[in-house]
Image (cartoon, rainbow, N blue to C red; front, top):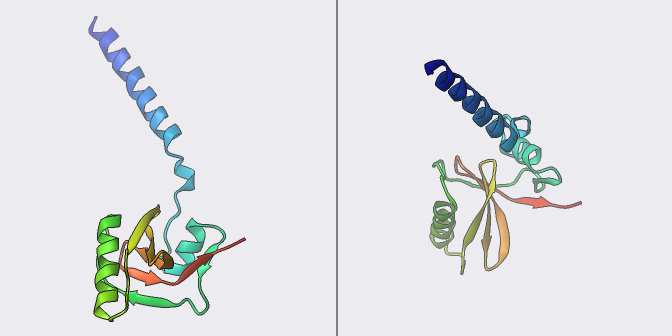
Length: 122
């Protein structure tokens, strides 16, 4: 009887692992190079840093969610005395946040605090 429970447990464990692998396509995980523009382009084909890999600012802080990203952008634009109403950042995944101010795209913030001008196109 104990062997049956063990066998059922093993089968369930295999099914759980298989469904996890099926749900998360592990082959699509991109190993970051550490260089913002290369990593951004690799994560989002058709997107790149603007001319000259224009960094806006390096906040040198960990950004764990879109609320923190939005707060960082809001604080930054207040500190440089630029009008920024309705600042908002959206989680793109892969450790990147697209940030907007006055409904205009400002750039992309990375989880390590690097903030670059970015664009996407065809």
